[in-house]
Image (tube, rainbow, N blue to C red; front, side):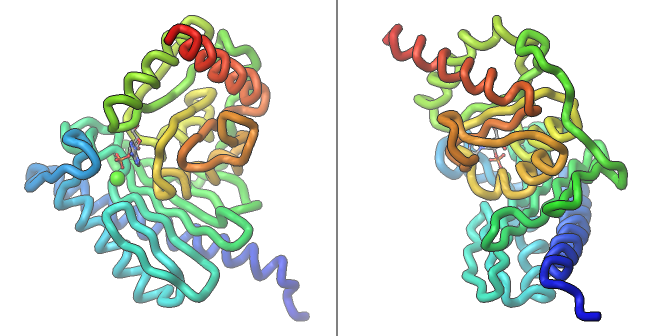
Length: 276
Ligand code: 2AM
Ligand code: CA
């Protein structure tokens, strides 16, 4: 019997999930090994605090080299400059080190994030956190996984009990705005966490370790894997005005908390606007 297109498509997602896992593990081993001998040369990007090390570039080179070899018809976008147009309909989004500031300081919260999209959206992805040896992954319609175990989002229903992760942009003006907003949120939730890497933050919502996460001004590579992993774990994702999730505005939460938290963030912004 000829397999239906639907089954073939699911198989592709699963195949790409496994490939993303393999690449994330290999790149993760490379950056951990590099970290042992010191971070080496460091440059800055968008602002004086937006860092890039030789290991960001080495990790991206490893991932892109392997993708070019095994998936030569796919498009690739990497944070450190890779931009290749594909013809297969599959595009990869790579963050070779998500949480470079943590990596630079020797803090554990950094990851490799690799996601694949097709014309219908996110298809497969993997996020590897090498310091805790945790590999999060998902394929569309196949659930979310951590090291071979299925994961699911939290069941917290009350905002006052919610542990909420967030992050701040590298731009000083935007950082001030995000911090001002938090003053009107922190009293309404259990607490705030700022781990410093978007892809693990998304995976922690997926695994129920935090109840929600929001951040603005990310890149497509920060989201491509983690947002799919979160949705496959039962989370809802979107922007702050009721639209679909986009790198510029990300809110991910368990289904009970998504709308209440969205409303709280908008109320905080309105209060900030009235104060200025
Ligand atoms: P990075 O470490 O790969 O630079 C910190 O809040 C998180 O947001 C990190 O995942 C960081 O990714 C990301 N981030 C912060 N500012 C960003 C920007 N201007 N563009 C893309 N990603 C950003
Ligand atoms: Ca990065």
